[in-house]
Image 1 (cartoon, rainbow, N blue to C red):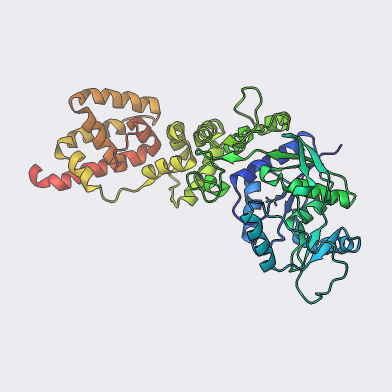
Image 2: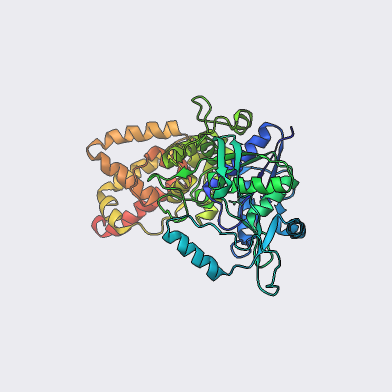
Length: 475
Ligand code: GLU
């Protein structure tokens, strides 16, 4: 069998992290079997869909490397065919026009709610023989079978049964003449010969309705796999309304997560292979299967994602990280000078960073030109008592032959012995001189990352600053 999967987002918002996992699993399943992966934009709900979200989806999938195999398919390009099929369904009496007004449906809803029943259309228009309300708006409903059971063998959850008495006659065309998601999805899955529909658990209730429609149209039924939902730390579904966690891929990108970490994290969020945690893309493709997807909901663990991101920041080739870091700088509006050695910055700071944003914040400390020393810091750490010490450091650094970490380290350690009675001030005044900040970062790392030229310039600047400030006392 030639495996075909699809990712079928509705462009009604920025791409949710749950959708990313759906896309990933569908993509991996297709790639595992050398099959086809289709991107289908389900955009028939004009009121909620927006082209900027289509761009967001395409951009995000490209960023993740989840490539699709033919041009993206837009449902709005296929309206003619949907309408033709609906017309035939009306002729064949497997669908009907429903003229029930919104007021009537609301009354019905209120009544059913007052009886504690879940809302279900009462099929009032189902068996109307002759339509008399020609000029009034109507929707088209699918005639769902009234009895019997719809079953399907979900690849993740096993056998699932629905009683037809629980399903009402679904609207397949809105009163504006535009077909609905459930209908278009069925037609497209069939047209595209999708073999496996892999999607979120929230669609389980749609599946029996879609199977009934496929049966009525005498089309074959794909295999379904419904992925468990993702919960936040409070055990609530990760949703847009919840702001304890970031929900959209865009936010993770902005915060400096790499595509490799996101993919690896989402792969493991609901799927496992032995005790393995780290997966390359090739390993993902080779090892992924639907059998090992969890049935139960899974908790989103930001700490684990951070751990993975730290792993990839340190593991992936330095040039690749630098390239991504530069994009992060653009995002953070950080103007970096070309004469700073970015590779050295990555080398000294990457271990302690879980995101590129943190790495960029460290670089900001390094790159910031010091125009004026912060008064609270200079008052305390750029005092006349340190001028000899700073001058001493300057001279010794100046004489260093090569600017390598080991040599800087030997020098700083040796000097710190000379100032052991005032060690913390020795470190602090140097930090203020170098970065106008007392963030506890190793001086060796700072000097190495800032580089010879800028380090010497900055220390000299601090020395002049002290001279100027205390000149009265000196002369
Ligand atoms: N368009 C649906 C959504 O964005 C997905 C439908 C499906 O996968 O069948 O939730």
